[in-house]
Image: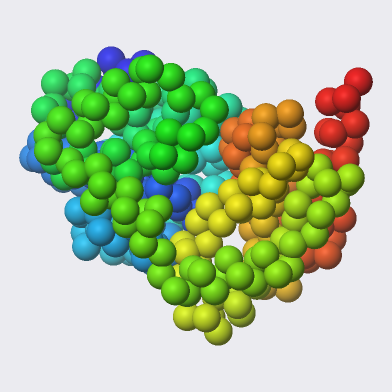
Length: 323
């Protein structure tokens, strides 16, 4: 499949590059890395999001070219490249109308991805989707530039937790070395993402920790934030990225969950596990997806109902894991 996608990139023009709602580092890194490479190859290409670009990743090259909404596109794409999107309903923006004339290429590493594209390249053991983008570009014979490397490296370090998460192997570090090779400054990126948080993010973390609940005999830690919290603090939603990891850090805790209320009947949830519990299976029950140790949900449900349902699912999963 990788050969087919590389051949398409080499032989064709007019690409739309998209990713998922509430994009994280892997999503943004994949989006910009693929877009910049296509542009370097002389292709007509556009990176598109459904909502504004997350402030956390404004240091990345290509961010000023990102379009918001399909109405901003000034060409008819022949191919749509969907990157890091675990389920079709998480594509942002929705591209249903374009699929009548454009071929959808689905590139992802989430185990829950059902293969919704016309062409699917899903590698469940890859550390990040940026890894797959690198492999496609390598197969296409496109040399890695410093700008593309910077974007792809950002995706790799965010999805591996700066190489702390499970699944990191010697091959992960080999890839990291290749991405740094053009002259990418590792510390410039890691400092920005892991050492220089805005004061507004610290305020969000303070609220989250003040509201945490230790449940299920200390195996689960839950907390919540509201959209109003972000607005009052003056924080971008992207500043909540990976705050949930703090909830998983307590000794004895198996699952950390952060519920963010977006409206009365719409919430997003970030789940993290130490591995005993497959949180992607829990997320799938509520319309989300992800990985065994990291998953997300966007649910049309009140925070109260969602909390009850999460407790039920996690409690059942913990009971089954002890049999």
